[in-house]
Image (tube, rainbow, N blue to C red; front, side):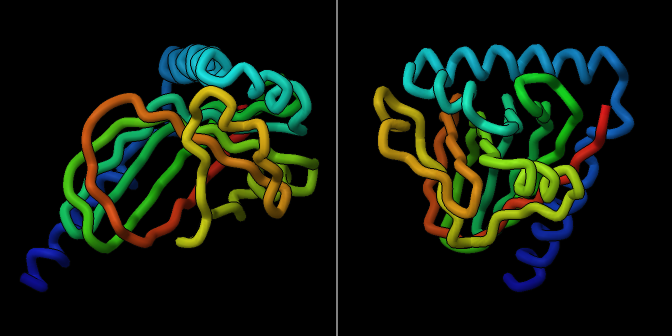
Amino acid sequence: MKNLNLIWVIVMACLINATPTFGQSKSKKNKIIADSKTAKMEFIASDALMQSIFNNAYGYVIFPNVGKGGLGIGAAAGNGAVYEHGNVVGMAKLSQLSIGFQAGGQAYREVIFFESKKEMDRFKDSRFEFAAQASAVAVTEGASANVKYTDGVMVFTMQKGGLMYEASIGGQKFDFNKL
């Protein structure tokens, strides 16, 4: 069983690292940017109060399509567009590994807001990651009303599909590439 888990970790790590971001064609980048604009509209449609968060954030990154799966050990990956003052400034890659009770697969969207230049620069330097204790708010009507920045960052997710049972710990790592 230990060997099976080790093999699973190696396979998932390879899959995450195989997710291209920085060698993408212009059309692929344009697709991610278009999908991120659609995701932004859907976040706002689900909770109209998010419009002011988008307007007032120093910057944000939208991952319009994150795929996640696991059986004991899990992984997630996605590509996104990075915005500073509302303008696209680069592309990003999300990688996640987790361990614990989990089974299934799901797709979701994620948006990370940065309160100031300091947090935005840390993300752009690819020195940004979430530890196991980090949490995200699931977007529903009014969910953003009382959410505050924690250490200059605010995270929201939106379920797209799939089914996953999970009680695990893990972390997310991000890589940035300037356009």
